[in-house]
Amino acid sequence: MDRREFLADLTRAAALCATVPNVWRVTNRPRFAEDPFVLGVASGDPTPTGGVLWTRLAPSPLEVGGGMRGMRTGVTWEVAEDDTFAKIVKTGRATAAPELGHSVHVNVDGLAPDRWYFYRFSSGEARSDVGRLRTAPAPGAVSPLHFAVASCQHWESGYYTAYQHMAREELDLVAHLGDYIYEYGANLSAVRQHASPEIRTVDDYRGRYAQYKSDPALRAAHARCPWIVVWDDHEVDNNYAGLHGENDMESDEQMRTRRAAAYQAWWEHQPVRVPRVQSWADLSITRTVDWGGLTRFFMIDGRQFRTDQACGDGSQIVPCGDWASPTRTMLGATQEKWLTTGLAASHARWQVIANQTMVAPFDTQVGDGMRFPMDSWSGYPAARDRMLNAVATHAPNRTVVITGDIHSNWVNELHDGFSRPDKRVVAAEFVGTSISSGGDGSDVNRATGPVGAENPHVKWQNSRRGYITCNVTPDAWTTEYRVVPFITRPDAPLQTPTRWRVTRTRPGIEAV
Image 1 (cartoon, helix red, strand yellow):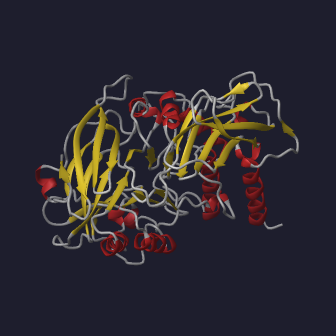
Image 2 (cartoon, helix red, strand yellow):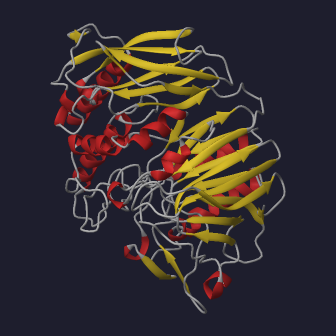
Image 3 (cartoon, rainbow, N blue to C red):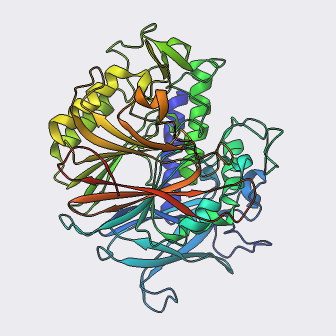
């Protein structure tokens, strides 16, 4: 049998095991020496009638196999109207299979729109913590939305104090924009130790997710409300582009193998729907999530389909090499067309592009010439102009881009291209800082001074850790930046240094 056909058959069979009760060699009354639900619970990708419920059985999560000894194990799930489970509305059985790291993904349907539910799992005598699932409003409904944006949570850099605060907020949703894990190990200045060296196999990636999910603040934020999740680069390899690794030390086949392992482990640990792919290496995360008629989230993938970075990556003076070539792409032709078509077809009041790397340029070269980072959209100027032209044509000033990756906060006005300063403003970009990556950070605002003068579209910036929250109504969008003054020791207080508002159909962003 062809190797790829075999992998495709294995993928389909394993995915089936995730949610379909499988009576073949299933242990329905397992005995666990330790709690098998130590990695927590999560919900995600909400719809008006349900969503995805997630957990993973792993009584010894940092061991290969999670301490499950290869058992194919039955798991019961329940959804209730109350946290005491006196009014159970849905229940069922699933199988935690070793082929998928004993993860469980349940696609719940048949619930009422626009309301909260509670869910839990059990296996043998063990029972999970209780999580909360919120269903989306009915199609066309314009109920307000209050959601948070997070990204970049390097374990060794510091504590997840931001998640402690996030878990106390009344949120409908969390959007996580990537770098959920980091593929490389600890450094000498690490705050939290016990990381392994750089990871490559599916068991390596599973162990890294287990390490990150051992943090109680992260688990609490997952249990609080549903998440919508995309990946960035560190879920596979720093700054990878398609089949190009960071240092181009791996062949295309080796990179496909590594990508398959990384994508599989990502799916095994996130509350997202069962993939329909021929190979794990081709897993697609491109999808839309609707919040009634208020918002449509376009969840994009800026890693798998992009052209390799221009001019050797890094920060470069431009023009250089093929930097400006219209053949270069961030999303790939198919995803570009999907986004353009989706913007044209959407009737939602707000279009939200959930995106990995910063769209707005930031020129760090004072005076003549320009210098940009090649890994962000600034390294793909023709592709960026195509996306912003689509926004300008189909959804001007009712489109908001939410972004992660850069370990700092930014408020950016997006123009219909950046080739000329007189291009009109057509969208807003709110870039959220990291949860922990980059250390404590600083309050220095790089949008001021001589460098700031080179970038008038940048309205505010700082480099503290934290997250952002967004309050969305039919005609106004308000973003608040939540930061903590330190993460290299626990228990930092929460601060809100700035707030910004976008008014639907009106160009520009205003400070509140």
